[in-house]
Length: 83
Image (cartoon, rainbow, N blue to C red; front, side, top):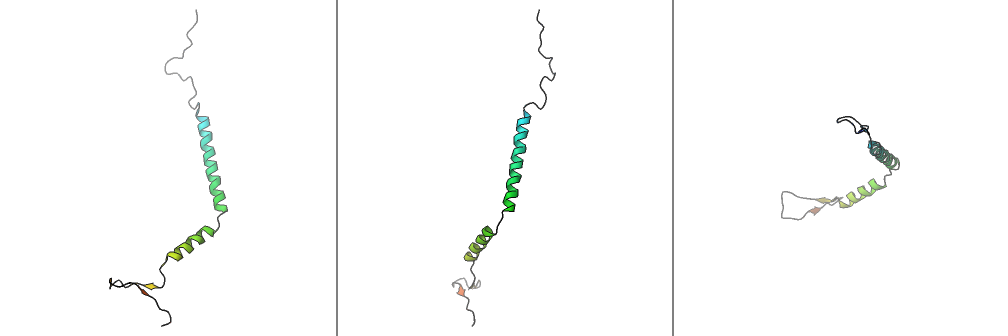
């Protein structure tokens, strides 16, 4: 007569980390790719982006115009140099 080979209730028949090796490998790979991207991005940094940003901000600035907050009925008066 054949014996019943089913495991006893509560016994571990599968290792606790079975199947997690692939997930852990993908997680490690994602971290390595992310750190590599940050290193390459930091090493290749040039000032062209920041200089473009600063020139855009300079173009938006309102230099040469003096506002008079005490008299809201009048437009801003241009600043005259050399007078």
